[in-house]
Length: 264
Ligand SMILES: [Zn+2]
Ligand SMILES: [Zn+2]
Image (cartoon, rainbow, N blue to C red; front, side):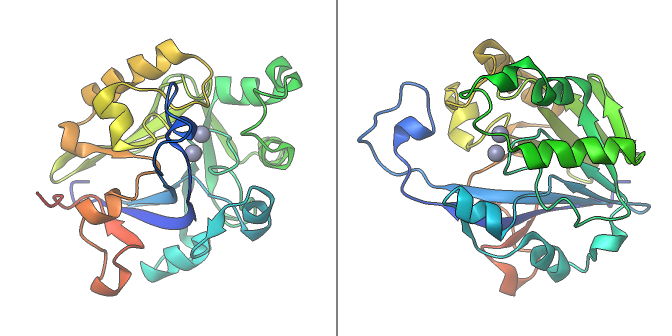
């Protein structure tokens, strides 16, 4: 399991965000902290595990985001066809993590119990709380439940040898992160448990939040799960592609290898 490879595959971008859009208490007039959008891949000897499914062109238009390269195209650059994917971890059901519903026809999906509860329950009667969700993403997951394609986890769970999920909550009620053992130690794919490196480093909170106390506790949990702070991968930071080597030289700025040591 120590020769497991991990990839970050960037597929979309959102520019021109104010500080207030990325941090509670941020200045409305201050700066621009763009967000990048990723899916991740853990390739072990036995299985190919995709973490999150991103969104497609139609959703990008609806949400005014820019698709750079569709998810399937990014996966193809590292030799992964959708049919090869055995497992998909959905870190949470927000629109940017749970779209492209039909992309992985053979995969088993992994979700926390309380994320499904939250996304199908009374909180979705509230317009503010449902902003990051799309009914079609949630209902696509319900259809997968009825097709026997979903494994639910409650807290910690194992996807494959050396690949585990861990409930974090906070940003969304059932947000989970993914821990992957590699030759350089345990790498943690934080997803939205830390959107940017700055959230983890400064303890600040992203404005879309279910429970701020759990967001802050989540930063400690990420540190406990990872071999070091250099093993935590934020969910939306463009810096990831500068800190880690490209999967191939021609994939710089698109696909990075996270099981290799970061620069600096
Ligand atoms: Zn989210
Ligand atoms: Zn997100």
